[in-house]
Length: 195
Image 1 (cartoon, rainbow, N blue to C red):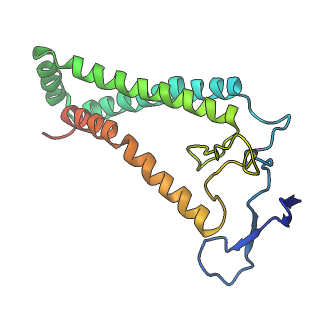
Image 2 (cartoon, rainbow, N blue to C red):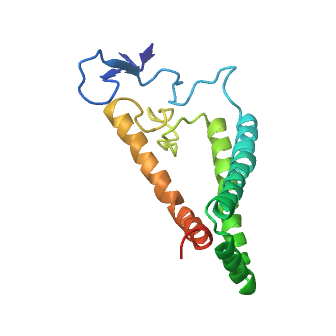
């Protein structure tokens, strides 16, 4: 395949990203991409509606049910295995007496809303045919001239640079979800942890 007037660049990296004695892994940065740099449109390409349905089941049904199962399991383990029935009753009485259940509900609603936003973003990603780790598509804004139909600007996703981009995106994903995670940890720890 040709990219512009020169052959596609093939990048060789080892399987671990470090210098290794095994044969290098050959990655083609342009494999599965169209001329604009997006994922190729094929009969197997997931549509936005298909992606929406998939993430709806995962983010709005499966994960909340798994969370509920863990919460119920933690409660029963605390009561029946760890002998914490009295302390849990005291903590739940405190929450009820001071009407603190609204705080728990509010934090849960914020988390559920965040999941809904993630659902919409993930579905739109499929429609845009944008692969991870890219979070945005940048376009050179030229209405005429040689740059008018230039490919989109995306993150490098192969080799050492691609590995770094994916690792950095994972760090940002953690940073973005940390406030909500910490709030839930504080609330759950106040009930189930020793205070």
